[in-house]
Length: 205
Ligand SMILES: [Mg+2]
Ligand SMILES: [Zn+2]
Image 1 (tube, rainbow, N blue to C red):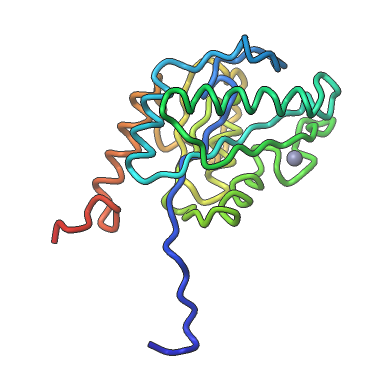
Image 2 (tube, rainbow, N blue to C red; image 1 turned 90 degrees about the vertical axis):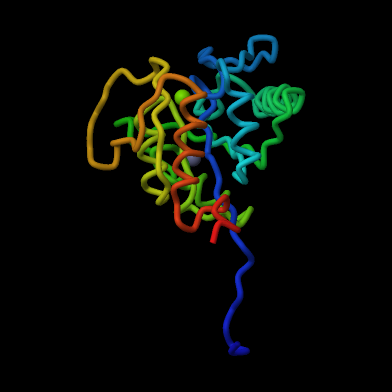
């Protein structure tokens, strides 16, 4: 091997997960841990995905911080409570990233991290050595789908009723549209089994 060749460590695929309306029931502006409710099947699906070799990273827009609806300390407490709730169900998150910025007046992102921008996904990939091309974004609105596509991931729309506008562009077309977390896990793990370079194909030759 050439001494000049850079050998990169093996990169893991990830599942990026929206929080409100996807991981937990959407309670607008909630920072009360007592109001946290995991979506049905989410913990079981995330366990299965972690067993399949996927890093699990929450990526959430929290414009309530910029708008003064709750404090950074309140949000940090909520995040800690959610991570603990998941740990009690056997799920350890690799990371939990949030965008604290507001949308601009025309509704478009004013920063590089607010979804549909892919900044949080890129940041997580750098921090944790994630292979974006083998990763997935799961969310309940088309901004989640677009953020995933912009980062080079595939995307799943978990349609829990959050999307109301349905503004369609080529980047806002999900690879799969499903109704529950069981289907999320089945689509991702089923696809992984079919991939010629998938982790689960090792030893089949
Ligand atoms: Mg959402
Ligand atoms: Zn941001």
